[in-house]
Image 1 (cartoon, one colour):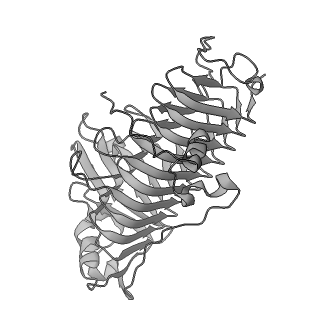
Image 2 (cartoon, rainbow, N blue to C red):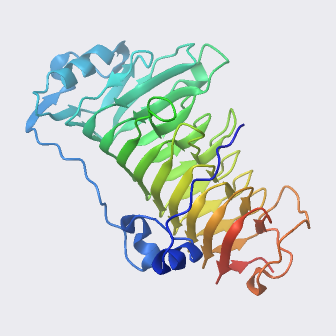
Length: 382
């Protein structure tokens, strides 16, 4: 896959130079949060101004697991006034045609009961989505469960059958929901348009989201700015590559900037726990558990201004942390990184490691092509 060139460095200056040396240059203050000794608080919450509440059953949804409820749920959303409001989904199994999708409007809160399930109907499409958040703002998705149709899928091509697709959207909060068994990603966050004219998503928060047994990724992040992924679980991804818990890969469409991943668990994925690629700038990963993934725990191929702090990275199939290719300005501090490289152990370590790495380590790989990777206070395997 073709990779974009590294973005230009920040302007010179004593403070910028210091931050760059610490791997924190140009990172938004809210992203740093607990990495700077503070607890994380959301810097962006969707504002739903409308007070109207509409129950989907008032528009004909049955939730009996037999009727196609797509049109009824959409009718409830479309019936909200211009200022928006809340659509409620009571307990039940609601069949959804992911070829059409449920399309959320600006100013919509979709509140699902804990026992409410949106079940994708079988299809043979390469691209589909249960909930679509496209070019809108101020949206909340709260509660319930989304179940994809990967086990009933009628084709064998494509990898874009998503549970929730957020593109060119702003001020979006997704909370307390499970997204499982999708043909593609559990959740996708990204942009519309091509490089140079792409419209990125901004101010997106996932909190207490569980993505389990999706086929391509638990979470994919492409061009965006200011994304918080807090207290979430991404596990058991398998089916088609990359098969990672979280993959941040904007490619050449744009930049993925100012992202915070905190208190999350990435486990049992057939690919990596966390993948970071070119055009990813300003990322903090703090207090996460990344364990039992078949690939790398954390793989960095070209990201910049990355902080990995106080994470537990254990029992992954390849290196616990691998900074390769063009990765730059990376701070790796106070992590527990042990018992990795279960699939194979190579003694190829082209960069001398610090004393606390225990000499040759299967837990950490830093290639000589990287720049300014700073390592301190970690606990590695003996």
